[in-house]
Length: 270
Ligand SMILES: Nc1ncnc2c1ncn2[C@@H]1O[C@H](COP(=O)(O)OP(=O)(O)O)[C@@H](O)[C@H]1O
Ligand SMILES: [Mg+2]
Image (spheres, rainbow, N blue to C red):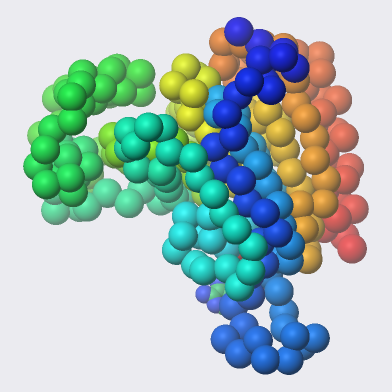
């Protein structure tokens, strides 16, 4: 169903980042001289919500995802991630280039979550795998192939499924669809939107593609050159089936697009 204000408030907060500051500066002795990638950054993401971050190259988007993922330690602030009754891992991270292990078959790549759990098959894992394969339009035959034998679009799908097998609550995506051809991209965007809504996951999507951001997001943030999430846009395209084509076809789409683009232009120009 469409997210009305009422149902939105009931949605649980999955990620809460509060006043997070990060610098790559190894010796932040003299505070005034420190080059902060971002300072006092706060962000919340609720279940069934997709938040997109757009901004100039080098403004700190990937760094922010890495900090949220726990790969980089912030100098101050707090990051809280709600896990769903200890069901799975808290976070799944999907990169622009798939992170599949080339020496393993697709099946063995997809079994990674089980293996890291000590070979214990979680209840319903096989069914989930079959469902994801179906959702992302992958045939069973590819399970015995190696990543190099698949197209880029297929590899990226397998990579997304690999992350989903960990059953993460929060999905972090860093330009995940940018290397794909247009049709594959549209299809994956739609499938991903549906999955987040249906399974009530939360997602942060970094993209340089404004079109993609408006079509997929519940909220779009512009990150400025100082690493601030300086502008926030609530997107409500009133289409609930998750189809990005339908989203692009709504009359409001162009309005959101031009509103965000005009801010983004001035942010990048400054
Ligand atoms: N490992 C690193 N060490 C030092 N500086 C880095 C490192 N990674 C990124 N940076 C710098 O931090 C800034 C933000 O980078 P990044 O988060 O990759 O930006 P974006 O993803 O928005 O393009 C850039 O100025 C970049 O050069
Ligand atoms: Mg980046």
